[in-house]
Image (cartoon, rainbow, N blue to C red; front, side):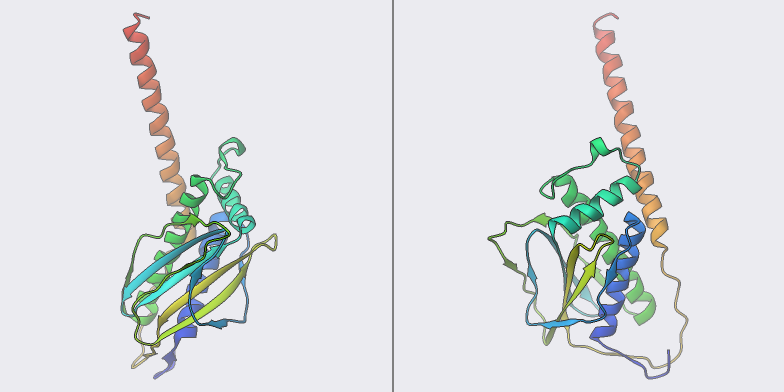
Length: 227
């Protein structure tokens, strides 16, 4: 960076968009892209079919909302599960499934984690966030999420999956600027592939533990029968 370079809302939004594309592309093997045009909006809302919001605070205050169509959510979810080695019989087929919400919520958690890491290394400030939770939303319901900000700015970015399904990311944050005073080294971000590998290992370990517990229960039952 050049000395006295100013980092604006759009630059922070660009960092967030990179976190979205890098994490989702790595997790699902599904190439995710986003529009070069950003839309100014007056407020952030959760919209059908499945959405999530995350509040963050610290170096700056903000709100991130993701809104997926059912088709986009199911494409990313399905590709992610297959990438994790899950058989088709264990993959949900409706965006209303709790498994879809849980998996998409975990992916959103990874995105925000990657974003906060980038903010820490690139802006030398820290932000914290609440645990994101994905939820299916009825087509007749629109939820507006408000947070206390002095001079809020809101932006919306359109993302596209490999199969041309659409989802949206909305960011609202305080109007702020970061001004670089002197040169510094940027620490390498954590590799999204490492995050995905760790997640896959955790899923495999949990599955093995459940199978072992079931086997022990069966052995105990047979012993009680004297067999």
